[in-house]
Image (cartoon, rainbow, N blue to C red):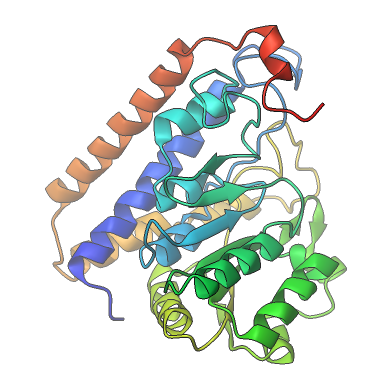
Length: 328
């Protein structure tokens, strides 16, 4: 494992911040939705897809990126947005549907964008792959060594847009890294029931690129694989496909009864929590001490708490604002 101390602590902070953000959102989202769940009620109306447990996928890749690198994320995007450096105050205000949000409250949590750090996400499965290819092509045509990273779920490799994107990236050997977050469940359907191969990384050679499978939600192994993939892309050596075995602690969406999941599945996943494992790695290898790690966690909690406070205070948009920034 080649990660420096600075990178290890950066990844730890990104993972802790994302976890606290998601756990806080799980509570805030339910405000106004009890005693009878009403998806349209409360501070945060609409669907909510949380990524607690999937933090290594974001931290282990984004640690290698720059602001001018483009990242596209799917409908479960918060951990990736946080690791890419999206403005946390404005992101939270957007999720609340407020005027200070990234899109003035128009997009909600599945349609976040922050041009300052070249981040965007979409609720359409595999939709981020083609734009990532376009961003990579644009960087090459403009003579820049910026790259693009496309995050998708394990269901996306069953979509046509995913294959078209990989094919074009392979044909033109574009600087793209494709990350598949394999949390085993496509809504309520297990991967084994929807996908012909257990390992999507084996698809990569069909598109003239390397393929890597990362087991056990391991941020340290992913760090090394992503370092190689990013370096290849920046050097003009083409794309890479990385599939990460990861975990989803919450349901597909908040309010999901999760009757499809085996009993105690989540309990078993939490027993090998990736944040706890990184904490013990840092401690056991005397890279830092518990007081430093607690200070990092405290700073992350304060930043997240401030973002939620900012969103609560942000005004709701005027009804007539719905007609602004649209084609008529």
